Image 1: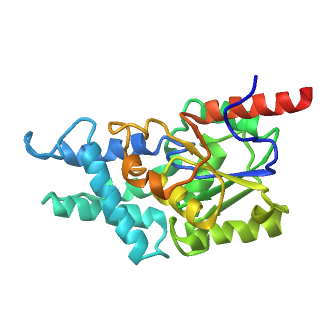
Image 2: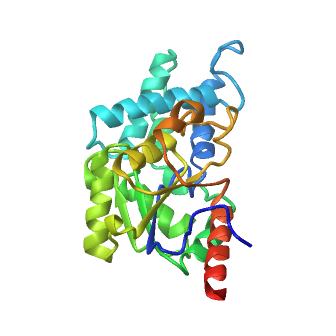
Length: 263
């Protein structure tokens, strides 16, 4: 059966955003944010379940810190951002809450489709992670949450000294993928796979990097989360493929390679 999508068999490698794409980032964040929001008056606009508006406010605070403190490791940035949110709401925040939060990303679970999907993809491509999360948390995630999948390379904001959507992060990916793995994005070897429109797909369009949107409900207003408002950002993106999950994407890849083998 002919696919409605462009060919997926010509790429040599896939670069992934990790948290939000492979790892259930929002659930991990919400579990801690609830500790703060449930202490607010019942009528407060951020005291909702789930506390999505509070998550979006924390994300806005974090993004500003990423911009102004690009070399601050993500685990420290999380602690400071959560502290800022609590202060903004006039709530004291114990170190017993804020400090563990910084190291929590390494414990957040993978989406149920992630491992099986990545294992399928690994039979066709080299797998790379390009993440804003610090080295300690990403190491724990790769070792525990994403095992037994093996990645050819992991590049982090801590290594690069800036946070996506900075072009510097993608330029670092291009340079190191070429040098370390023989993957040349200008030759069409690399395809970027991500959930966040703002952090990944907007700069991908600006740089001419082909991309896949793993939407995970982000194409609806209620499922927008913190990846960016699709209606506001769609003109700034140019992803050529859209799938709800990594599993759906992997199944489409399998179909493309099967069709190619039959010819």
